[in-house]
Amino acid sequence: MRGLREYYLTRNKREKALIWVVISIAGFVLFYYLDFMSAFSNAALDSELKEKATLLRKLQALISREKLIKTEASSSKPWGGIRLIKATYEGQVLTEIPRLLKKISAQNGLVLSKSDVTQKEALCNDPLLLKLEMAIEIEAIPKAEKLQKFLYQLENDEDFFCQVKELKLKKLDNAEGVHLSATIDTFALINR
Image (cartoon, rainbow, N blue to C red; front, side, top):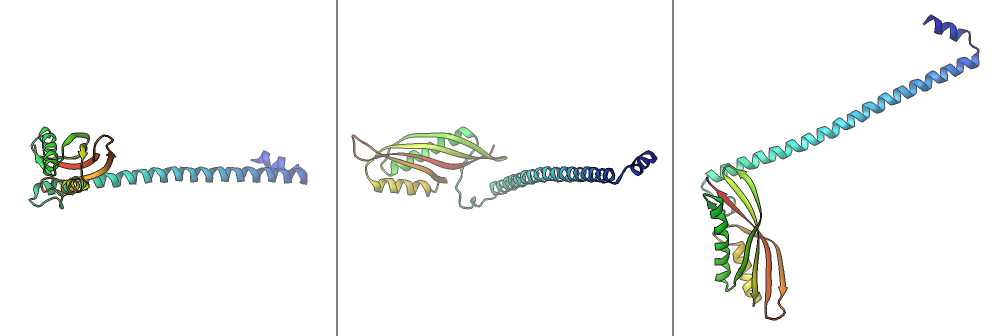
């Protein structure tokens, strides 16, 4: 320290001013760098905390939804108006839904030509609550009234809940009427 003081005292005014300018710039750069780095690390920490909070909220929603499903499954009241297909194994559900769809189409004088499960999602595992997305097709619907009655009965059937997500009608070239392609959602409860 003594050597630096002697060095400083032996310098003229111009060199002393230059030394102060260099020290000031070095101090400013050091302060700026440290402040910038702390702000940068705080931003990274904030984004990490936000991610964790979002994941926590999603997890809490899943847990509460699973608890609700378990309590609803054990109660005798309906699931908030949602009528579930109840079965003891998954294959039973996959045969019951097409049977119900054929019954509804036959009641309206229509022929169901296709009913396939396109997507299956487990909403809860104990008991197993499935959300099934299905593709259905009906050929040659002669009148709009039959289509209207079919769709109404499909969404308001007392045996199961069904919601039409997507509906496509195609005019047939060689015959009267239209071809119906639809995507529907339904739910099933499997008590093992």
